[in-house]
Amino acid sequence: MNNLFLDIYDFFARRRWAAIAIAVAVMLACAVAAWQMQYSEDIYDFLPRDKNGEKYASVYDVVGGQERIIIIFSNDGNGDSGSVGKIISAIHDFGNIWSGIDSTSIAPLQVSVDDGAMYETMEFVQRNYPYFLEQEDYTRADSLLSIPGYISRKLEENKKTLMLPVGGIAVQGMRYDPLGLFCPVLQRLRTFNPLGDKYRLIDGYVFDESGSKGYAFMTSPYGTSETMQNQRLADMINWAVESVSERHPDIKISSIGSPLIAVTNADQIKSDSVFTVSAAVILTLLVLVLAFRRGSDLFWIGFSVLFGWIFAIGVISILKDSISIIVLGIGSVIIGIAVNYPLHFIDHMKHNHDNRCVLRDMILRYS
Image (cartoon, rainbow, N blue to C red; front, side, top):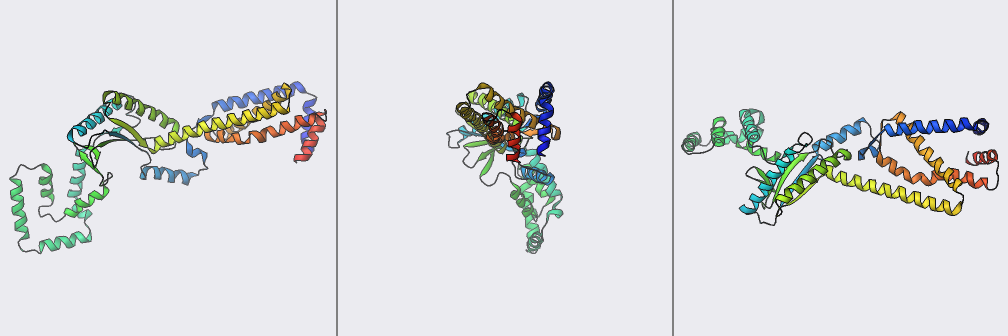
């Protein structure tokens, strides 16, 4: 192996122009390949992933609501009708602005609860009561039917109810369950309430218990990992928030969600990576300038590191069509190691001007 490197050196030492031409051609080819590679900001690309890991991550995002973004509207009111009306107006304007920009196809916004869908769900359950009954439901029905006069009394109550100007919900429930035997089935639907007990509906809009905060919802189609696309979505949200804030200066609007947090984290990682690379390069150059006064030495050290970096990305582009920017940023930690080899070579040249002898000594030392 030692003779192999020396043979390569001897071959190109007699053909310097061929060595220069090959080096330039390889560097240009690798640069073109690196330019065509896709650089992803998916924070998950930083970690090794297999098919099972990707499947579990996608399921977790969907089931855990990790793709949900919440727009929060609040003011200094105490939840009275005036402050609630202002919040509803701001939510309505936000929905109009959001539908006016090229965003509805990306992340549809939900500003209110669809009452029609809720009624359809209730009617579906009522039409299929037998499929949702549990053992305690049968026990309860038997107990009610065993009460003397229960059926006649319940029918009399239904008659009085029909004589009142009641809504369609009561009539619909009476149609499928005139004796009120299956009420627990509908009550169990509350366990599927995504809002929980700390939220309530006001005119179809979601508010907190106090009525001082209103909410609008959207789902990022990119999940939490694709921060480049989520950055675009976050910019559109910020623009819509600023537009609504100009119309409603007394309403405070903010947004929160895992996709937005991932964007912030990715920006921090990128800025930290740029800072780390810059600091590493500056400190390395400072040490080299103090140790080597000749500009040619600094040039060849920098060129060897740059060539290795471009060559590495070019080889990676052959094996993969994309790479995480975060991975490239972390590669800054090996700049000192990459500088180490040309640094030793040039330092040895101060004591021995024969390139071949210096190369042989380094091969013997590092092999």
